[in-house]
Image (cartoon, rainbow, N blue to C red):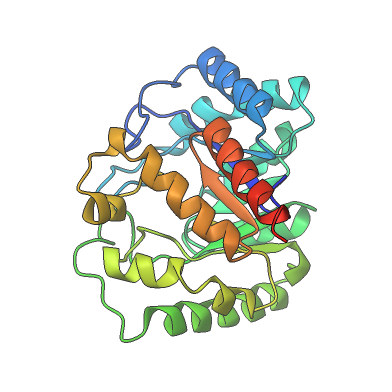
Amino acid sequence: MTGHTKLMGIVNVTPDSFSDGGQFDSVSAAVEHALRLVEEGADILDIGGESTRPGAAPVSLDEELRRVVPVVRELARQTQTPISIDTSKAEVARQCLEAGAAIVNDISGLTFDADMPHVCRESSCGVIVMHIQGTPQTMQADPHYDDVVAEVCRHFSRRLEDLEAAGIARERIVLDPGIGFGKTAEHNLELLSHIADLHALGRPVLIGHSRKRFLKKVLGREVEERNAGTLGVSIALAAQGTDILRIHDVRATRDALLAWQTVLNNRR
């Protein structure tokens, strides 16, 4: 279909996510949406109970557990599609893994909660390690890099060594450069055009670019009008061999990538 590029469908069980906050903030609505994404071709489901948009207020542990654990449990009962839990809290990860999740997707790269490496080490789960400069509350204040691609790659190289020393085999790790997490639009575009540098670290690469703010600078469009731009970036990423695309619109992305790949396959 798209070579080896897999699609991770976003399921935000939140009232305040930047793109779809409040649409799926009940268990039934979230499960229904997730199953629809599976029908549309999602290879992975990513369940999140805390908005990480710039300036978002933190959510309590109890509230995040209330939002996501029932969704993960019900999805694990209804689908064989791998479930990822998008959290930086170790206890949320632990309970969701027990409920049937197979992947921990941590925006902090397992640094915000000191217990997260232990939870991941004790599980056989996959681990998505993201790069972030600052926290969701501070990350967009004034992000600065001398060379964003080189600095993110150095960060990942150190992080892989640290996590391996903590007992998490690098074979379990996927790298996410954190588009929009402590980066300007220019930083994001640099990273999006240098996937080969990230691949040189020897691990799969995940990109979460869907409807994000850098597209406003590129297109001049608000969040609800960024689907076409997201598709354009998705094709550019697939052309660079990106392993996983984290996206809202699974059907449109799968169609776009299939059409693109079909044309390439018919070249003479």
